[in-house]
Length: 473
Image (cartoon, one colour):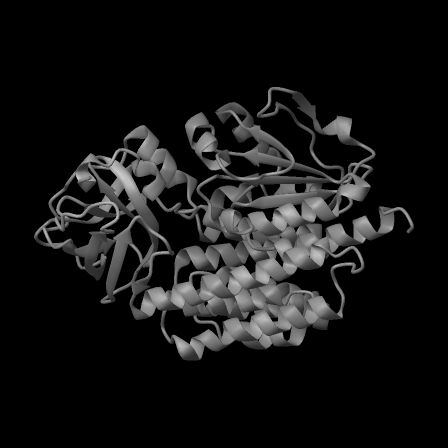
């Protein structure tokens, strides 16, 4: 049978792991062929992708592999879809395209024929990187993209996959509390492997991500090493601000808040962009708030609004007083009412008497998707104490959420916020980035707020509640 007549294309597709891609296909948003502009602004990041796509002789005995569209895409902040690179295979299945992206980063790469997606993966776009891919359909193994950048990204993903599996096994082991010697050894080992990628893949996005993740993993285990490594992170690292946050908390535990504030100011001096400086000023606000220095926190917030009026953090600064007065540990969590994905009414006040994790996310958020396995393991570990997990999607588009839920095991209670409810929750919980989580104790008081990759801190704090409430053996 000729491949063009092969009817069940769906079984050929390999999942990207990104709900947005699925939604693009469902909505028909993946664009048709677009000619690449003959000249591109110098500000764009350019890489090159080439390769060959063939079909197994078991499926198609005629070696004609024309007509496969290869696309590198991105979703804009406005929800539109841009084509960053495009080509169509010739008879031999060969393709070649330059890829122009606004920033170096990870982008969806999809292959489709006659409008149907048959393969998908992630592709690293980095200046002057040249990548090659060879795939035979139907896929029997993950797609391998050969380049220094993509090899570094694969190494990072594989290391984190092994680590997540270890976390899951640790949480599932009822004989351990989740903070024992075996867990510490695993954290230290993974952190060291990730840090070593700076030497193995110097200058790559994968190495930058790995270095930042190695610091995040060490939180709660080795404050001195966190600070030492954080000081070696360059401002060009996409997670520079996140690293500074982890280092600030570590330095506060080591030397107090004054030392932590000095560290933040040093990071602020090294920052490469106005937005980084503004984000670090916001962290100074948080540092003052954590030490209950209310007036200092408000003064730092006024500085943020005055010095960085054209950044996203300016609006956050205007809400800093609300954060100080309503969202610090020990305060009663803001209440809300909603309707769950299953159509049941939900009120946070009805959950008093139970510890609760409330998390806010968007389905397209890569960081959140990467935390799903450990999120599930935490949920399972907390079953004996009936810890409730309320997951609130701030993406109101029903189709995007359906695509995200499809085929995923996502325990807990799910809410898809309407635009009106989303605005209310962003204001009440002062959400500046996603994912954001709050751990709330059985009395309805905030244990802490966890932003971005701070899942390890949440896991540690939740484990203390689990241990305290778990019935004796």
